[in-house]
Length: 275
Ligand code: FE
Ligand code: FE
Ligand code: ZN
Image (cartoon, rainbow, N blue to C red; front, side, top):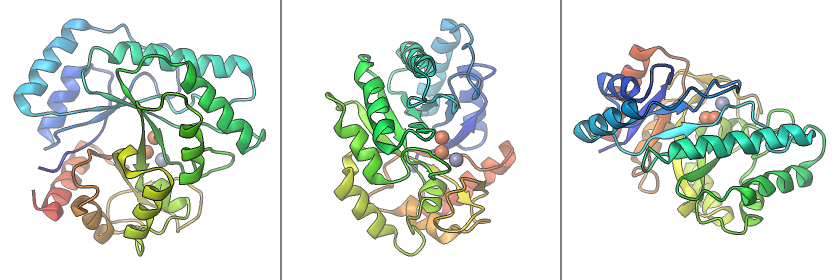
């Protein structure tokens, strides 16, 4: 059965997200660990976590995906900002210990003019300092807006290669980002996956963000569109959810939608995947 869900608001806690997911036909979901622009996380409510875990078990919600605030910059110029990224990630990972199997996704960061090499070494440095290995940490493929890191499979591979023990590291492939980054998943999905396999290794691929793109191939823009309404198109999404190398992965929608819109997209993609 296709494992699919969407990004949900975490403001009402885990149980509320679980219920929302079930309501829209999802069997997984993604959420921000705290305000996406950063700031302090709400106190962890252990009775909510417990109620959620029971609910998830009953309703077949599998592995879920926590998303770090997107303003974290592990390769910022300012050492204080890098420390903040490290502290926040550690704090998030500590809280995620209570949710077995949850994975943690983050944007590698922006090198802000310091260059790719500096970016890679700062990000690897932070990952080397994180000793919490119970949670799988995912680096997200990025569109390459400005000085954004993770714009190519090579950049992600170079970061992972510099982490001493990378057994707990994986990659989350964002369809809008890779398309905007110049990977033609519309005409060359198999070739893109082969390239991913050669450069990073498909064994590292742990999740997929399903987003159509408002912009053309290689635009480096990162503007998500509803499934089937952008430049990627429904046929490519149908091929992705059915693909033998991808179909077992969890899929997350981050399209500009309300819950009903997500519900429709989940139903559409289930129909395309025939399960
Ligand atoms: Fe993201
Ligand atoms: Fe994404
Ligand atoms: Zn994006």
